Image (cartoon, rainbow, N blue to C red):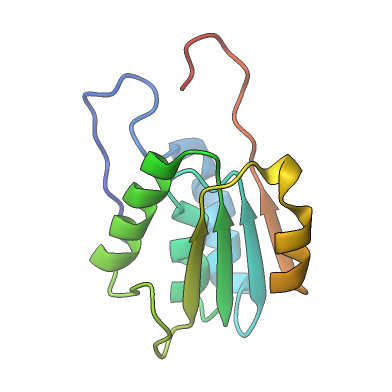
Amino acid sequence: LKYIVDITRNQNHGLFLDMANGREFVLNDAQEKNVLNLFAYTCGFSVAALIGGARQVVNMDMSHGALKVGQRNHDCNGIGRTHDSRGKARFLAHDIFKSWGKLKKLGPYDLIIMDPPSYQTGSF
């Protein structure tokens, strides 16, 4: 799996190393599943899910910029934004807490990933 990382951005460089086991779990468990990735950030879990054979991944995060990096992460792994042999990714820059209707419409989901950001000052 390939990810874009910007080591000049202090703590939010684009990939959280402590979630490596989670990405590995998703890679091994996503076969033929519809996946919901909440607080998607740069879509590391989405890349793992689609490489692992997911049918669809819906990525939702409030940060349009982070999702743009997520789209680039998909591109550098050869899993673009359109339907291909590895499934389809959607990128929704919405407030999760105000978008339940949209999420419900795109479901149902077999696997839900929720990794919210911490609330430390200056985190994002």
